[in-house]
Length: 152
Image (cartoon, rainbow, N blue to C red; front, side, top):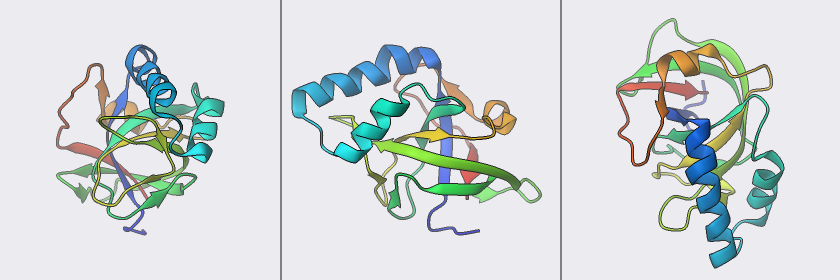
């Protein structure tokens, strides 16, 4: 498992929060401040409503992670430790990341040491582990729990 590019997910955003808050905020910021990362904005515009994809809040990135990063495994974590026996095959691809406050909009990478949001697609369907183990984020701000899911 490559630890430097692993992505530790805290929770997934409900469709209502995505439609009511995330997408309108990003579009407003793009109009107001301009596009900061053209390739990321293009990927976001093409995949705003992804098939087999979700918007996530994730933990502090252990390294810079580029958009387009692909993963092959998923695992349960608790208190930042992978739970033995929980690693499963799971293809996933990061469509793009999003800068957080104050000007949230699509970004080409997750910056090392920052926690941000991401749009991730699962070509074989969103794994049930996501829905069973992660919190559904229904309002902002939110507080992460000790349960996490790791893409590696």
